[in-house]
Image (cartoon, rainbow, N blue to C red):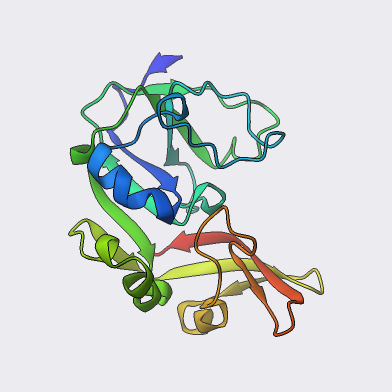
Length: 194
């Protein structure tokens, strides 16, 4: 690994909204400290669990909801290292992976959440909503429908997804269901309009 000192030390990380309140107090800590592993046993990459993983986008894709709905903007005072992404990792061309031993709470300068979920987040997570680091932004969603077609949804069409589950661990996270429980669409990408 090489040091990322040549990079501008603004990086991003996604986290589960249910962990956000604690992260804004304690900072980002590695899984070896928190015991928090949101991955099914066979789906986690061969990453060390004593590091915090962040990203620097290489494309317009600036958010990775498979890691959580909240996007943290980090201006790090910690030493950052560039991590090599495995060849088979589908993120290889999307971002540079960056690691640190930990990220202090003061280094998290903003938390971006989808504007179309603002009212719901304020209702369900009132303590988070009061934090002055929270920023709601418009976004574009890409999703798959039951017919297998991928579609983009602009900001004005997002009410369709207003009922999605917000936590990674909940069945239905980033999915929308018809009445009666039949799956109709899955969000696979949420890009913030910065």
